[in-house]
Amino acid sequence: MKTIEIRAKIRICSHSELSVEQKNVVEAAKRATSGSYSPYSNFKVGAAVLLANGEIITGSNQENAAYPSGLCAERTAIFYAGANYPDVAIHKLAIISRQGDEFGREICSPCGACRQVICEAEARAGAPIEILLCSATEAYIFDGIDGLLPFGFSGKDLQCDAAAEKH
Ligand code: THU
Image 1 (cartoon, rainbow, N blue to C red):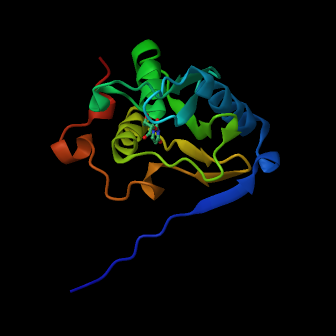
Image 2: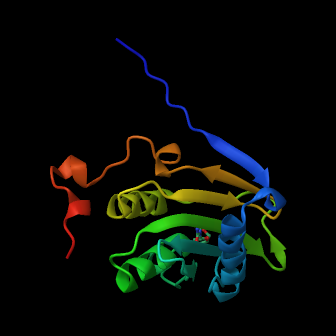
């Protein structure tokens, strides 16, 4: 038997330590919380993605009385980007939550389904996506989805190079 250990590098910094580019994405994610439709959880989430062309796309969680029909903020933003900018890579993703007027005291961490979708977005982009999980005061910065989804399932496991198939 052999044992392997999985490590993740996470940079933790205050918002004031972020680069201008990172700050812009985080601020967009904060603003995006205003579009959240979350009457069932009262937990607003905002996500923003920075595209290779410099544009920032935002999304927020959209809930539904039939709970599983709702969608998380990250997937709302990533799917919008994929649908409207199919050939433009995502470089950065920021996520933050808000309850009432207060941004989260803890960082907002993506659910499993969102991690899987970020994994696919990386495959499409052909490069790691920087992920900023934010609280009101801090950002946990991951250099790519590997740190959040080790051993992720991707097109490679299907023996097909999904990223290379540009439709
Ligand atoms: N939610 C997100 O939008 N993103 C996350 O990273 C965590 C959870 C949403 C889903 C649901 O609308 C609410 O937060 C409570 O789970």
